[in-house]
View 1: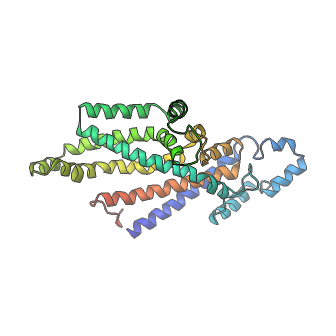
View 2 (view 1 turned 30 degrees about the horizontal axis):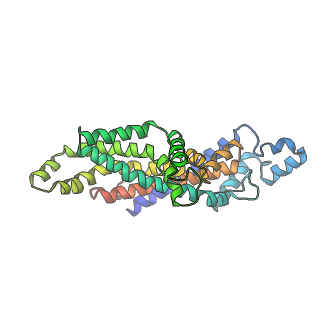
View 3 (view 1 turned 30 degrees about the vertical axis):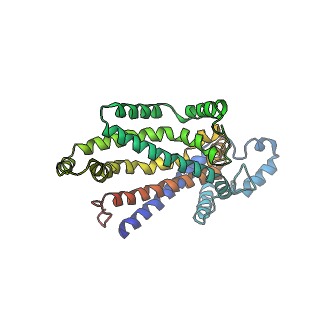
Length: 309
């Protein structure tokens, strides 16, 4: 277990280094100027002062080494579009809203998606199965940028059951969380159903039933526990996508999250902001995938993270 953890930690460091390097190089080939429209309005000597201040007058290899040194110290640089704020400050101020929305949406997705998948499998080829899969098909077919405005207009504006936008309290979280959950619910429901049906045909399930075990015991102790294993393997990437992929939903419901900052930084060629947010997102993804591997071993006692893996 210790050897596996150390190897994974080394792989995480190498992966992050590659991501930082590739992102840094890609920033250099982007068209446009990192100072945006202000560059055209500045005198050449003033623009040169800014370039010296941000180190853009140095050769690219020197810029890279300097940036890597700052990254190792946890300094992601100063934003070009917000010269008075560092990238870390922007992340600290904007990410809590995105994180909260993502966590609420993920919990809702897991509860509803797994429940629909279990119902569909237990009621195979019956009304419950058809109903659950119909909901899943709708969820996977309609993107969040369509669901969001519909929820905001009908439930928020027309019916006035919930606020149509903003981010001021629990009642404001419901609609964006539902909008963000649709696709994830569909994926989890379909995968849980397929896994449950596969487990139901196994010999040990038939043996458990022949021993006279109650249906609830067979379903909970044998079917669900084993069927959820393939689902766990995709929860990590899904969690990251939900936590960091809230851009459209944030825009629809006017949520002050990190997704908007990311797109704005790309449009304005804010090198430090783009690279910093990429490192931040990549760190979350790698860490969550690591936790997924650990969780997988706890769910299935047959799996052990030993020296040979």
